Length: 525
Image (cartoon, rainbow, N blue to C red; front, side, top):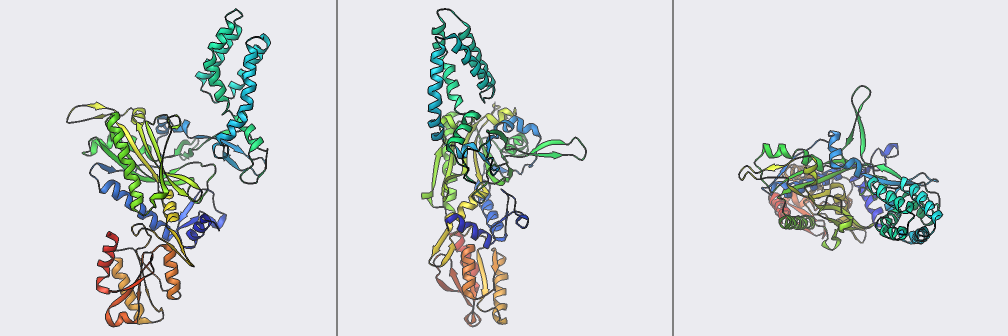
């Protein structure tokens, strides 16, 4: 059994994560959090909010609506940007994102053969009128189905058409001058549907059923989740938000007008988002319903200062995960190459974790410039200086579900037959478990219940009186409970209890009256 199988089994067995609607066969890409899971997830969100909002003087919070005016998504570019090319296996009918199953190496190797043929065609077109006409016709057909912007299509076709129609001595020279847009045409062919399908059918088996050569042509798929609103027909079409980010931007003016914030300042929020993920997988890593924790930090439009703030937030976010127990050796930043950044991003980096399924992103830090506020026609006026401008935005965007998954993976330990989660006490579902040594002894039950009720006033404490003491320890280890308190017969005589440490399994006697202070000190350490 590999590590992900072990994590998946433990998550269900101990009440962390359940498949949604499991009694009806489940529903792909949706998950429920059980008793332990919801506590841990809330602890993660609570720690993030404390670190990001309560511990600072320059950040305020909001809770924006999940459904917003559709114009928001037009202005933000999501209705165009959140589209992915999908292919379907004709045997098992499973759909996959092409960029998840077709590598750049596959594209490059197959493309090399086509590139040589097209170069030969262009070379012959320079001297043979019939070949020139064939080239023009072929170019027209390929451009028609291509994803090249219309402007560029017109430029390529009209330029090539004009050159070919010229039958004077300068034609060959002008064809050479057209190299710039012929070259861009060459490069764009590599990503057209017909070519990707060729690569799939000659090189890529279906990840689900293993079948070769039975792929559909790639088709565009919108990741935004549509909803229909209203009680009468026709209903109004809107969308479940694809990210929580836009809430901070559309509420920007209201936040500035209703508070005393001044640039630089941040707007934080935690909330659900939805995307039509094509291939959900790896437990909660890729889901269709997920929760985000984001900060939009607004700064003056200054290249040097904003770069420093971007680097500052990179370090702050990395440090937060490390402080909560993530192994620093399993964290790294992956900076986006300039040509691969989102069109609006001045800088962008992903914080990645070395998961069992490879290095995987679970938080992005982005310098978004003035793209968002500019698209919404929003600006900022400093009431003290009178200066007015469109602020730039530094964003930190983390996934609550992914963070929890990686905390679970990172905390998983095996010590012989003992399995335990070495979770940081601050995010562990329960801080303390209390139980009597023997569940059939009323005097032990009574004392243990008294301690349990007292500790519950300060901590999230769990009660366990099932089975024998060994099984209780075993269960709490798998849940990740840092400390277990056992009331035994000695407790009735000297008012002390046994406190067992999860990580070391060592036990010590602590006075009952000192338990609250003892655990407070442990949690503060």
